[in-house]
Image (cartoon, rainbow, N blue to C red; front, side, top):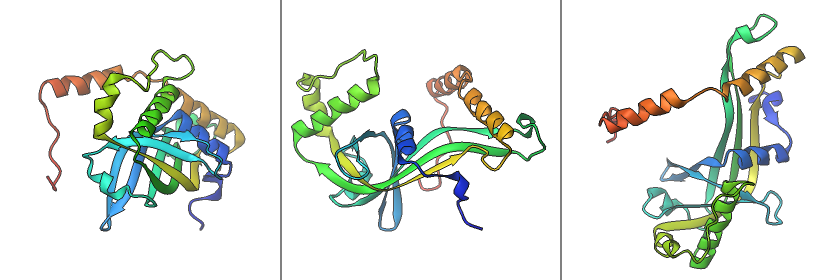
Length: 216
C-alpha cells in the first residue's frame, strides 16, 4: 500500500501557500551530527521570482540551531493548519474514529542575511504581513529600538526547493460524510480556549513546573 495515501496528498502548490500564509508559526528543523534541532518561529512566505518562492525569518542568535543555518544548508519547515478528532458520531454512516488535519512541509536551502539594514527590512516586511489587512501597528526601519534588537538576532531566508501538502479531510468517505467532517473541523476551531489558557497561566504564576526531561 502506498504511503501516504494519494488522496491525502495535496497537488496544488497554491493551497500549500495558503496554509503558510494563514498559519505562519512554523516548526524549523535542521540536523547537526545526526541530531535534529527544532525551533518554533514565525516565517513569512514571499514570491521572489523563483519556482516556489522563499520563506523569510529570524532567530535568536544564542539559539543552538543557529550553527546549522549556514549558506546552502538544507532545512525542513512544517506549517500546521487546523486539525481535530473526528468522532464516528459525526458521520451519516458507520465509521471508526479518526483525526483530520492540514499540514504543509517545505524543504529548502538557507541564505543568511548579513547586512543589518537588510535584516531590519525583513522585520518590517514580516510585521506588516503579520499585522494583517487592518494594520494597527507599523514598524519603521529607523525605529531606535531596532538598533539594539538587530544585534541579537540572525536573519535568514529559505529558498523553497520541495513541498508537500498533507491534507486529510475524510476523502475516503462518502461525499456527504466528507462534508460533515469538514463542518466538524471548522466547528472545532471555534471552541473557547479561555479555560485552558487561564489554567496554564495560573499554574505558571503559582510556580508549578512540568517534570524535567531525562536529558536535563
